[in-house]
Length: 589
Image (tube, rainbow, N blue to C red):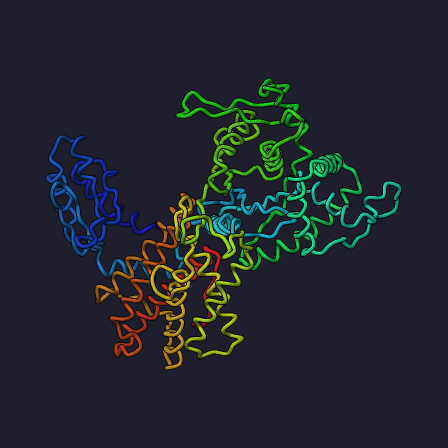
């Protein structure tokens, strides 16, 4: 189904051609002056130079040809040459009826199965998820869902931090705490236990303790480095410990991500790239792309067109250790081999900007990724407290993500119980649904690249540009539809959405008509905030329509059926959008 802007342009282009002008000038945009018109065409301004005529004369020519066109209720040429357009109520209603009948409300699946890798999450094993993991998880999940809805084969990868010194630190701390474990008995030759020697709670205590110890105890740090090397060299006792760490951590991570409504297709980590690294380094050396600099192996990535100096990408440190860049390049080689994606999207905070510039350039310079394959790095800003600094607990520590979710759910629960009309159990379930919407919408409604302030009171408000307000609108529509059915109403297949009879009704239709454009633009620009803005505005115009229209008391049954079909379409669009943002609406609030 064509977007409304394309439909309107199709009506205007023949008028330009009939006047002797190139029809491409008939492009249409949403009006930036909704008080004057709904859509506008600025083609006469552009055509003036090419045809050496005054823009207003061209605009008047086109307007004359459009006289009587059933698409428009009003067409006006205004100085210095704009064409102001108001769409006819009947034509707009026809567009609504067409949307209602089509799968995905007429949104074309432009992806055609093309594979896109979305790298998001980035959790470290043996550590609990904290608020620093929130943005990558929910932004990535939304983008994955948006792409999938548009027909792309989206593959989401958590890309775990599961390799490196942190493992050596855990192993050596475990040795100090439990020296009698068979993993530390060099004479042991039997099978290693299937049950892990620690719980998730113990594991989450072991790592920070080991990390703190390594900063004060050089001997312990040296032991951890040696243990890391032995692990990465394939030493089986340490590999067995590592497998325990992975199993225990993954179970906990999967539970916490699931509570956020975040799912991954791949649970791969840095360890999966290790088998590619020796060949990667040899290839870069053999082809003269990598060279030694101050003992390290580096690849130049600077280009003449760069506006600032960019340092070489370090592939191997002077002590022989590989780096994150090496691991990410190994991961790219694996992804090309297994999935051959048409695009990559990496979602991390701004601090990793240089890292990904270097990795992407090395990947293309070496030919591991085709030059024309898009590699996007979506950089997000910081979630701050009201003091403008990165969000912390009241005690000043980093807040665990599950604690943040619990706090926001409790706050919503208390608000629900202020006007208690449901059981405690239902209130808790509803609070969890609303709390997740408040948390996700509060984040996603901001442009990803910008910092934002986490304000719980504002996020859980049922008024304004918030998740609960969107949910409240959906629940309100559900309630109207339920009452309509209780009163014997039905929407037979023959019922249609009729031309609007009020400004509020037409504004609702005009907002719904923007759906296709917003969906395509939101994904193309990896901008979930555009969907948030759209559904906030849609909720707003719906509520104005609701407050000005006696839907259930309308005596004209055809008109009432039209209202019901229109608000059913509104609910469908809202529910589709919130699903792409990663949350759902309760049955009642």
